Amino acid sequence: MLRGLLQGQAKKTYCGTGLLLLILIPFYLTRPLSWSAILDIPLVACLAALSCTFAVLQDGIPLPARIKTLVAWSYGIGTMLLLTAWPLSMRVRDPAWSRRLGIVDLVIPGMILLAVGAVFLGVFRNRRAWPERAYSLGGLCLVVLFLGKVWHNLFSSWFVEFPNPAWFMAGLLWMPACLLAANVGMLLGCLPHEVHLPSRRGSVMAICYLIAAALVPLGYYASVTWQNYDADAVALLAILTGIFVPASVVTRSWIIFRFGEGSH
Image 1: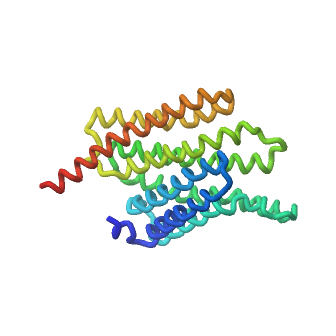
Image 2 (image 1 turned 60 degrees about the vertical axis):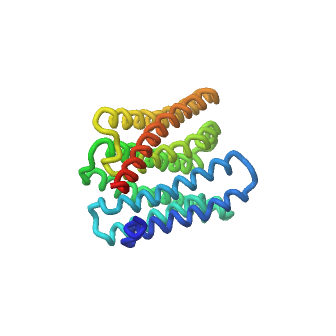
Image 3 (image 1 turned 120 degrees about the vertical axis):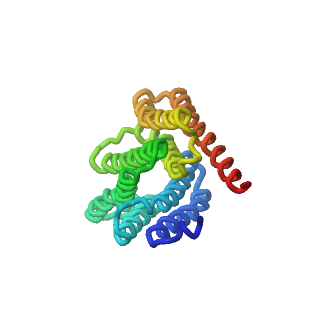
C-alpha cells in the first residue's frame, strides 16, 4: 500500500507535505501555553492527514500528471505558508511593503483551494457509489468552509477597522472542529465500498455524518451570535457523535473485512 501511495510525483508531494506538517507539531508544543497554541496542534495534525488523503485520491482525478503535480506543489507551499509564515504582512514594519504582502496573504488559501477543486473534480468524475461519495463530498465542503473562514479572517484584518472579537474566539474552537470533521469524511470516502454497511444501514451512517457536517457552520454561527459556551459544548458533542459513530462502525467493518480476507 505504501509503495502505491508513493507512485507519482503528485502523491509524493502530498505525502511529503504531510510529513513536514507532522514535524511542525513539536514546534507548537514548545510555544507558551494558551488556548490558541493548544488548538493549533489538532489543526496541524488534521492538515497532515488531509495531505495523505489527497495523495490517496490522486488516481481518480482526470488531469494530466504534470497538472496534478503543480496543484500538489501549490497545496504544499500554501499549507506551509499558512502555518508558518501567515500573515506575512504582519512581519514587516514598512506600511507600504506590509500592504503589498497583504495581497500575498490573500492568495495563500487559494493555493490550497486548487487542490480541493481537483479532488472535487475527481469525486464527481469517478463513479464511486453511495455512501463513499457522500462522505467525500461532505468532507470537501467542510475544507472549503475552513478556507472560507481563513479568507474571512484576512479580510477582517485588512478591511474592517474594528474586527469582531467574537469571530476570533469562535474560530479558535470551530476551525479545528471543521477540519477534524472534514478529515473523517474524506477518510471514510477513501475506503473500499465493501467495508461500508449495505443499503439502509450504510445510508443511515452517511446521513448521520452529513447532519454532523451541517452542524459545524450552524454551531459557528450560534457561537458568534449567542456567545453561549454551554450551547457550544452541546453542539460540539453532537458533531463528535455524528462523525465518530459512523467512523467506528465503518472501522469495525474494515477490520472484519481485512481479517476475513486474510483468513481465507
